[in-house]
Image (cartoon, each protein chain N blue to C red):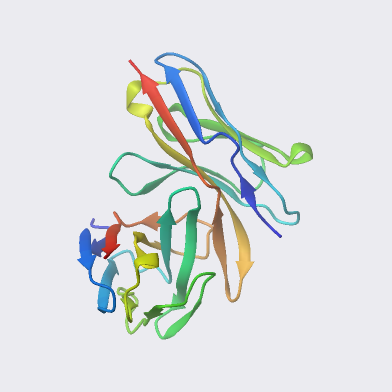
Amino acid sequence: NAGVTQTPKFQVLKTGQSMTLQCAQDMNHEYMSWYRQDPGMGLRLIHYSVGAGITDQGEVPNGYNVSRSTTEDFPLRLLSAAPSQTSVYFCASTRDKLNYGYTFGSGTRLTVV
Amino acid sequence: AQSVSQHNHHVILSEAASLELGCNYSYGGTVNLFWYVQYPGQHLQLLLKYFSGDPLVKGIKGFEAEFIKSKFSFNLRKPSVQWSDTAEYFCAGTRRWGATNKLIFGTGTLLAVQP
């Protein structure tokens, strides 16, 4: 019963590098989201998906891309890392919008130098 | 704009003290409210949620919250805290966003319980 699995747990990037944060869930949840957590700002929605093949922007989408080729996987791509993207990233999923509450992954701590 | 506010940023309590963390929301209509907890180095976990019905909601680990519509509040309470309750607590509500609802998080309250 893995829930939501995020990899890697930690990552250091140089400015301008690209990388993909992986997120997978085994609960057959339709809704998946990526949030970033910054001190004093709570969590902010980056991108979300309401099902395989369907993605849309959240409130802070710039500099990030997502895709949803399968129900299970929802990777987040940083196109050209910037120091402002230093943050903790959480992937979350839920069965039906928010009626059952999100299940969060353990997070990826990203530092861009 | 719809928002969720947590006014206590840092709270320090001794073990066995009672806890109340404030949460206010600023929107009307259908209200879905949540409290999440994040223990040091871990991911967010759902403590409790309110959708409708009894305004006093009981969650895991002895936590409860009361939805007071007239005060736009959803405060988290626990009668007697333990050292293991040291964590960051986030209040959240839902907001319509495109084809779905998204969670709006408060800025969090860091609780430190001293033994």
